[in-house]
View (cartoon, rainbow, N blue to C red):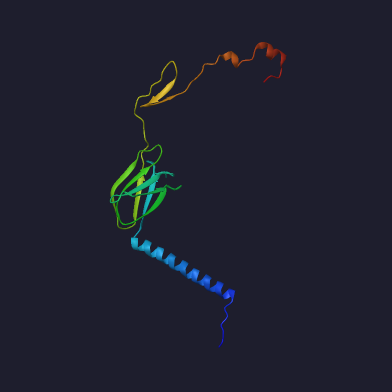
Length: 169
């Protein structure tokens, strides 16, 4: 009877091969699941009225059926890509200083490209300036700043200092 001896190196090599095969199988399974779900890119370009890109804008796609939200932030070129499963979505684009842009009832059945042109948000409410204490009030959010009146003498040195210090300035 012959005995088969297996070395520790052979066991390690076999273990590494099995781990590599398992990893490759799990990666292929994840890719197959993603393809089976049918994710498609929604590319949004965010611009202002002069067609300049707006970086840092928040893009929100909300699934109408489930309410699940998918978000992205626009890059330096004003673009963002969200990968979505086929279905119906409502799209919003939000950026500081601009009005919210909306596109409702988007049906994702193929790759979609949208350009969101944002309008600068303007304020039309009253501006109040009080005499006693200067302040600016926009709608219901008061902004105030104290502006103290400092006597001019504090900034002008006395004449005796100017006489004794020739190089004062």
